[in-house]
Amino acid sequence: MNLMTTDESVRTRGTVFDRDGTLVADYRLGNRSGRPAALDLRLHRLPAEAAAPAILTALPGWVVSARADTGAVLLASGGRLLRHLHRYARELDPQADGDGWADPRIEVRPVTSVPPSALYDSWIAAYPPEHPDGTAHPNPEDLDVLYHGSALGPLLDASVVALDRGRAVAAVLVNDAELLGPWISEVFRDPDPAYAGLGARLLRHTLGLAARAGVPSIGLAVTEGNPARTVYERLGFRPGESLMHVVLPGGERETPGGGAVDTSIET
Ligand SMILES: CC(C)(COP(=O)(O)OP(=O)(O)OC[C@H]1O[C@@H](n2cnc3c(N)ncnc32)[C@H](O)[C@@H]1OP(=O)(O)O)[C@@H](O)C(=O)NCCC(=O)NCCS
Image (cartoon, rainbow, N blue to C red; front, side, top):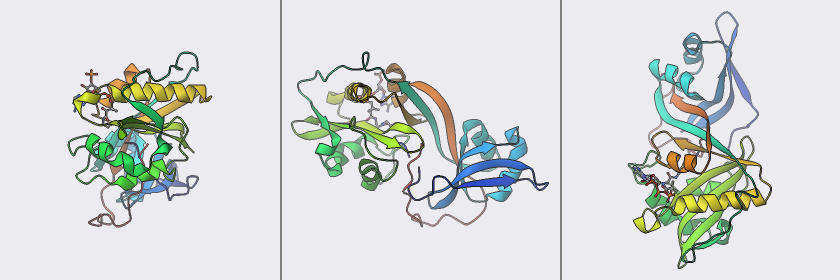
């Protein structure tokens, strides 16, 4: 699961200055987990240890998303880790990636041929509480906002569902993300061992559809500790930036139950 806020103005940037008026960092303004968020924070003062005091003073209680090395410094300064994620990207080639679907037991269709509710059971089962992206109470709305395009951008036609005798057992969602380009926002399969390997096969099929539709490259993000990383690497995805989402100490206490609804999709 990959998560960016829906309700922020994606172009609003904020800045952090030192006491002497020197620019220390800039970021994209958003919200996350009911808190204000400094997204894609970029340092103008290095090393991160030198920038951290001004950031901690300027943004108490905020969520900061930044490169993992900056995130580690903020953690060492009393921050709390929300998510550590790795971005991957893969170039597409309509010749090399363009194979069809070969498994006669499983029907593959555009995901929009089923309502998002048809995906809920397998999706929830794919993210048990012990999964790095799992929660005790998975929220189908997180899937709905990806399906309807309101979180990242519209779904691309390469988004597919795999059906076993009419039951949705796996899916891949690809969104045309405003800031990230074509983006695999979700891939999952039913955890029944009968479907082992189906996730990678469906993903490969999606890459072929996207390649034939003229999509030049596709990205995704995966949480640290998720074994799905090996699947992506085997499929030829190359690692890019590693990011951390860190809650800075201080500021308002988190509202029990969330306060503002967390509609964010981390990327
Ligand atoms: C990612 C996913 C779609 C891949 O599906 P798949 O291609 O059918 O692959 P599998 O689920 O069989 O597992 C892939 C590899 O991870 C390993 N793996 C899966 N779960 C694991 C776990 N809990 N602990 C350790 N290894 C695990 C498998 O053994 C397999 O490795 P192998 O191929 O070397 O045997 C599927 O694992 C899934 O739905 N995961 C949960 C949702 C998820 O994390 N989605 C990705 C979000 S970025």
